[in-house]
Length: 464
Figure 1 (cartoon, rainbow, N blue to C red):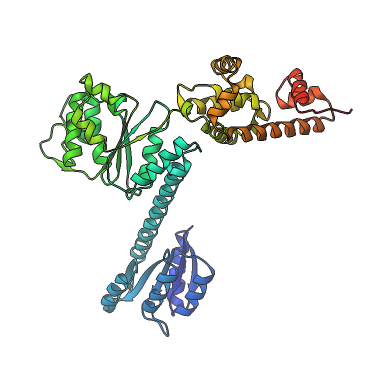
Figure 2 (cartoon, rainbow, N blue to C red):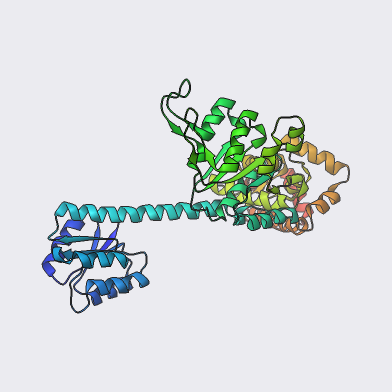
């Protein structure tokens, strides 16, 4: 509910305005002078101040000058007699959002108030969306602590403020689009659109139409004119995912966009200028694609102004515990489940796996484990069979120490902390069930034999 403050030294005017505005569902307060208005504004926030221009001792103009510096998010609308239009125009220059002349028409005033508040609502929504976008895609939300990832984050911070074209390389699932969104979020274009297209998801003709748009009748099925995604990104960032899959005929047209910053819709002769920053991504070896004549060399050099390579997850194993814990928290909260940790043997298996699907695969593994968990821990039996087998094979060859070394020293205190957490959970379950190990094991979601083994490991004894 919007809050409006009416400021007028005539009680009859205030009464009429209050009845009109409350009838529209607004919350209304009144002030008989500028001084009283300032006191009310000091105690509460108002979306709109509707003030008379001619008042004593403080005029509406003076009130406006006092409100704007102290309450920049409060809009001020002036009410003025017909003969004082020049003063109203001056007030607009000082920051008033609108003015209405007395005697005003009922509908005219309500429409003007509605327009002002609707614009305020839209500004708030845009700011909220911008903040949400930053919260979701800012560089702080790229999870990890390995030296390899920290180098990537440092590069993002360095290149984001520039207008240079960026090529992001890396295997499928490493988070290339997240890097592109972080670049956009930290750039001067953050308040403008971020538009992406997956070049591998469309056949040749459809991809060209998606990128450049078309006019009505340009081809069979073009029943109306349509803007392309490049044009939709005007003023913002355009992200070309899987650019290596782009057909050669479309590559030639994209090259012109990068060189001239103009596009031409299919079926149209007129060119349209676009102001975009291009970020491209690929999981292919574009050098090999050039040698096979599947990718244009000149386009490659246009895209490869700045390169950011995102290493695969197996090359930065110290990020695995951090990511696994992050995904556990996310999915435990989403599912409303009390999954409070990852058992040490499960974490060791996660550290030993090679992750051909990279971060995306780890995310799905943890999502599945949280969904299936019946106790407070993600245990080894909740992990996919292929992960357990691969980990068993690797650990069976005496590579556990190697895995911990690959993961970095940070994994050891994490595993120690997990051991302590698991011991604490077991003790609490046994205490709640008054020493009944069968009930405690059921509550923990493990077998009684597994519980005995964990108790032996942690030197836990039970007195009935």
